[in-house]
Length: 260
Image 1: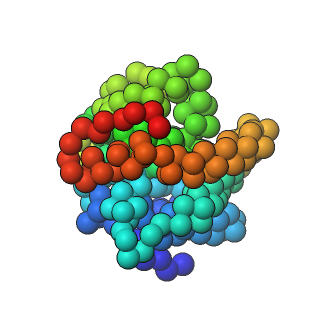
Image 2 (image 1 turned 120 degrees about the vertical axis):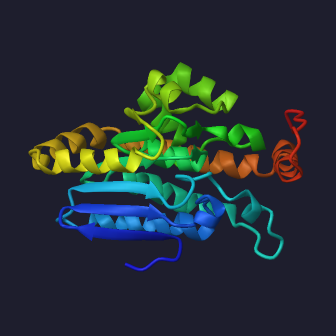
Image 3 (image 1 turned 45 degrees about the horizontal axis):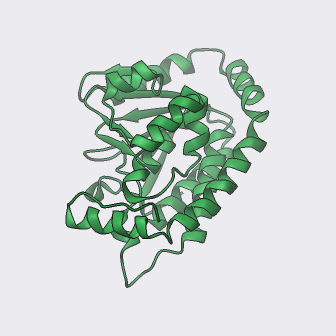
């Protein structure tokens, strides 16, 4: 498959999905969201692939949604269409019949963090910056961010992380249970490859069967969360707080929110 913003490579039973907008720190515009969804759906049909490694090209895994694209007057973002692609992305990732590994360096923020948390194994460098930081622009997590956070850390801690938008380094994220392993700077991908090799030498059919048993019982919950995120995000996009948040981001100042 050929894409503009991502690439997919297959090497036997291992596939690698690379986010490839390095000039924007892999910030996700509408095209990238759609192409990630398409790539993950395509991988569902690749029955010989048993392990998927997801990484980002350049200085970061992903800085999240592309705020500049949200503000582009020449090409206004169709939020309903975008939320549809984000929902496709999250569901395809969660239901993949393979072991998924995220290799995180630099920023993994917003939708980028949702993508990371949807993976079975998360390996991050100690100087990574992980943040569910939608709150900074008056939005809510999407990409099943609510669902994946709850699975990882439980509801009380999920609310705290969502509401604060706190930026965590690798060690802080590990201590909270957000990720599974911390590496030195520049080593996440090496460790992810080693992890993939270990899985490929294990009885993967049995492991994937267990994953499907555990995940299948929660697919309906995931679908409900995605539907709620879509309607709520569309509503949040129309709030004055959101407009203030993105304007403050562009102007590099602290936003003044009023709860409206």
